[in-house]
Image (cartoon, rainbow, N blue to C red; front, side, top):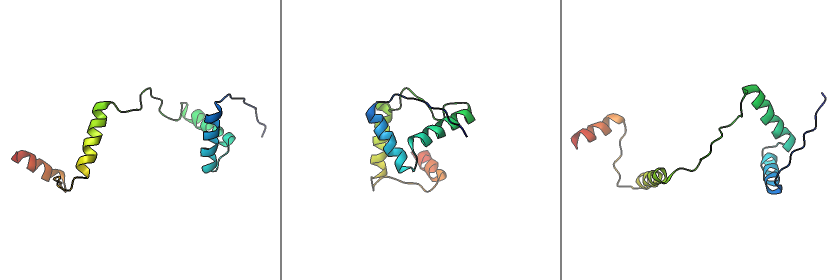
Amino acid sequence: MSTALVNVRLEPELKKNAEELFAELGLSMTAAINLFLRQAVRSQAIPFTITLNTKPNEETMAAIREAIKVAHDPKAKTYTNARELFEDLDQK
Protein backbone atom coordinates (compact mmCIF):
# COMPACT_ATOMS: atom_id res chain seq x y z
CA MET A 1 0.00 0.00 0.00
CA SER A 2 1.43 3.37 -0.94
CA THR A 3 1.23 6.30 1.44
CA ALA A 4 1.04 10.06 1.16
CA LEU A 5 3.00 12.49 3.30
CA VAL A 6 1.12 15.14 5.30
CA ASN A 7 2.95 17.95 7.09
CA VAL A 8 1.18 19.49 10.07
CA ARG A 9 2.33 22.43 12.18
CA LEU A 10 1.63 22.01 15.91
CA GLU A 11 2.54 23.82 19.06
CA PRO A 12 5.44 21.88 20.61
CA GLU A 13 3.59 21.35 23.93
CA LEU A 14 0.49 20.02 22.15
CA LYS A 15 2.63 17.62 20.11
CA LYS A 16 4.43 16.39 23.24
CA ASN A 17 1.17 15.88 25.17
CA ALA A 18 -0.48 14.11 22.25
CA GLU A 19 2.49 11.80 21.73
CA GLU A 20 2.49 10.90 25.44
CA LEU A 21 -1.24 10.16 25.38
CA PHE A 22 -1.04 8.07 22.22
CA ALA A 23 1.98 6.16 23.57
CA GLU A 24 -0.06 5.26 26.68
CA LEU A 25 -2.77 4.00 24.32
CA GLY A 26 -0.20 2.00 22.33
CA LEU A 27 -0.47 4.26 19.29
CA SER A 28 1.95 6.35 17.31
CA MET A 29 1.03 9.86 16.23
CA THR A 30 0.64 8.50 12.68
CA ALA A 31 -1.70 5.71 13.82
CA ALA A 32 -3.79 8.15 15.87
CA ILE A 33 -4.14 10.57 12.95
CA ASN A 34 -5.06 7.67 10.66
CA LEU A 35 -7.74 6.56 13.14
CA PHE A 36 -9.16 10.07 13.23
CA LEU A 37 -9.21 10.41 9.45
CA ARG A 38 -10.72 6.96 8.84
CA GLN A 39 -13.50 7.62 11.36
CA ALA A 40 -14.19 11.05 9.86
CA VAL A 41 -14.46 9.55 6.37
CA ARG A 42 -16.60 6.64 7.60
CA SER A 43 -19.06 8.88 9.46
CA GLN A 44 -18.80 11.80 7.02
CA ALA A 45 -18.38 14.07 10.03
CA ILE A 46 -15.90 15.19 12.64
CA PRO A 47 -15.91 12.13 14.97
CA PHE A 48 -16.52 14.11 18.14
CA THR A 49 -18.73 16.95 19.29
CA ILE A 50 -17.36 20.44 18.78
CA THR A 51 -18.75 23.04 21.16
CA LEU A 52 -17.92 26.62 22.03
CA ASN A 53 -18.71 26.36 25.74
CA THR A 54 -17.93 23.17 27.59
CA LYS A 55 -17.75 24.76 31.05
CA PRO A 56 -21.02 24.67 33.01
CA ASN A 57 -22.46 28.07 33.90
CA GLU A 58 -22.62 29.26 37.54
CA GLU A 59 -26.22 28.10 38.02
CA THR A 60 -25.31 24.58 36.91
CA MET A 61 -22.16 24.60 39.07
CA ALA A 62 -24.25 25.65 42.09
CA ALA A 63 -26.66 22.76 41.44
CA ILE A 64 -23.73 20.34 41.14
CA ARG A 65 -22.26 21.58 44.44
CA GLU A 66 -25.65 21.24 46.13
CA ALA A 67 -26.12 17.70 44.77
CA ILE A 68 -22.68 16.66 46.00
CA LYS A 69 -23.42 18.13 49.44
CA VAL A 70 -26.76 16.29 49.67
CA ALA A 71 -25.22 13.05 48.41
CA HIS A 72 -22.69 13.13 51.25
CA ASP A 73 -25.17 14.20 53.96
CA PRO A 74 -26.03 11.17 56.11
CA LYS A 75 -29.16 12.98 57.34
CA ALA A 76 -30.56 13.46 53.83
CA LYS A 77 -33.85 11.65 53.14
CA THR A 78 -33.51 8.86 50.59
CA TYR A 79 -36.01 6.80 48.63
CA THR A 80 -35.80 3.30 47.20
CA ASN A 81 -38.16 4.08 44.32
CA ALA A 82 -40.09 6.92 42.67
CA ARG A 83 -43.39 5.93 44.32
CA GLU A 84 -41.93 6.57 47.77
CA LEU A 85 -40.69 9.96 46.63
CA PHE A 86 -44.07 10.99 45.21
CA GLU A 87 -45.93 9.75 48.29
CA ASP A 88 -43.63 11.85 50.46
CA LEU A 89 -44.14 14.88 48.22
CA ASP A 90 -47.93 14.45 48.38
CA GLN A 91 -47.79 14.55 52.19
CA LYS A 92 -46.07 17.93 52.19
